[in-house]
Amino acid sequence: VALKTEADGRVFPVSDSSTSIIDCLLRRVRELHIELLCGHSVQSIEVLDAYAGFRVRLAKQANRVGRCVLLTTGGDERSFKLAADCGHTIVSPVPSLFAMNWRRSDPMDLNGSPSFPDASLGREALIELAGISISDAAVRLEIQVPVGAGYKSVLFQRRGALLITHHGFSGPVILQLSSLAARELYAVQYRARLEIDWTPELNREQKAQCLHAMRRNAGARMTDSAPEGFSGPRRLWRFLIANARASGQKWSQVSADSQRAILENWSAATFHLDGRATHKAEFVTAGGVALNEVDLRSMQSKRRPGLYLAGEVLDVDAFTGGFNFQNAWTGGWLAGESIAADLSQNADEIRFSRE
Image 1 (cartoon, rainbow, N blue to C red):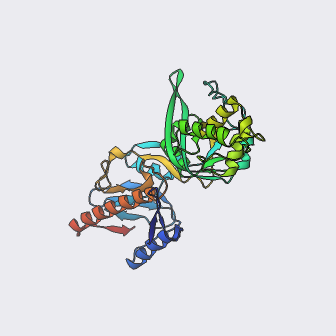
Image 2 (tube, rainbow, N blue to C red):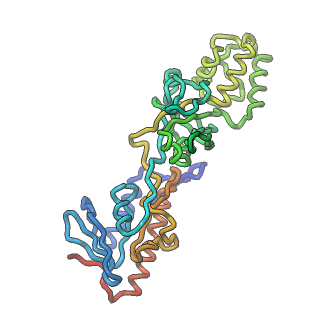
Image 3 (spheres, rainbow, N blue to C red):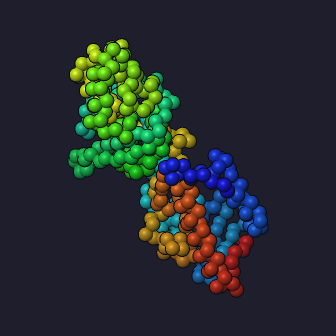
């Protein structure tokens, strides 16, 4: 499959279609004359003796008996039971890699927990920015995590491309934060505070100097004219000015308070979150089979020799851009190599049969 690498290290098919990967794998299945059963759910995996290995019970087909079983069922919670029945510990699954929804303009209330300072920008004001993409934003996620009878503030920070949606925020930087903070966000029902620096290539002092320069050197211009250091869309700048109560003014008329508000909106705009996207934007689950129960050199279970596990059935999740795919493929390759070596050493024993 022809691939391309983005500037941030993410890898995609040149076709920009995931079906290119699927087609490649299916071609290889046909070339090797591998039996492929689709739409046949596995009811259970029964551990037999060391000679026969396992009995795989199917819903619509005859059972299969084989020396080795490779469990690559993804993050489907039903598959975790199969691993648990074979003696494995399951780390509770939680959603990962999702867009975040912003809260309406009312103050945050975490069911009696300490509220964040009410300096956030609300959904009604931001709705006009839906569709805007920022190529490089610095985003800080603050979560008030329950600890005993109180709460502690936990911070996560990333920098990258950001997309404003009708419901909140998405894009690579948001998906990365959702992965890093998956369990903390789940614990607080996805209520948190998001702080955005729209042009992180300039520090706060440099931004302040840009604003001073506009007042000093371009005082006759209107405030919807962005300073030279602002690299975002003009629509976003007008929004930042409006929320600083500086619209319709000349730069020479901007008060010191308004200038400070503009600087705050530019370098640390704050938004309250109250949920996550629940549709196709979420496609990875954190959690699964505990990694310390798997030999990661061969992907063989330490609990049940002959049982192999790979992909998202394990407690692994990664950022977008092919990393989850790579985890699945690398694990599958290691497992396949190990299974082939095992079968070649035991060629006279039963490999796989129908009952």
